[in-house]
Amino acid sequence: MLQATCDLPVPDLPPGREWSQPEEQMWEELWTGPQANQWDDSFIPAVAMFVTHCSNILGGRASAWMAQEARHLSDRLGLTPQGMVALGWELPPQQQAPASVVPLRGA
Image (tube, rainbow, N blue to C red; front, side, top):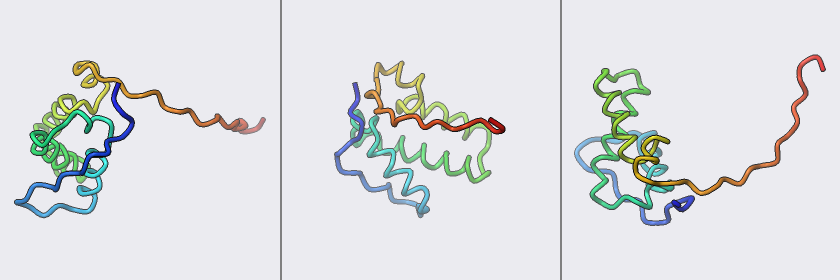
């Protein structure tokens, strides 16, 4: 069972290019998420590639191979349900907030 968050220091983004604020935010979120408990510094390039591909996909600049590579990286990094199963990882149970009742329209 993975811990809910990772309290280890977030590594610096790799040098060699300018990183946008959304990319820096994604980097921070990935390295403080539960899966980061299983990563070491050897994962820095893979996580950086994932951030780059996601940025290009969300920005409408990605080719089909970039989208495919992002999908493969997300599995290998344990960021998808399939990837987590393949790695034998489980997230801790989430604490459910009390469900609020929303009336149906016209009721």
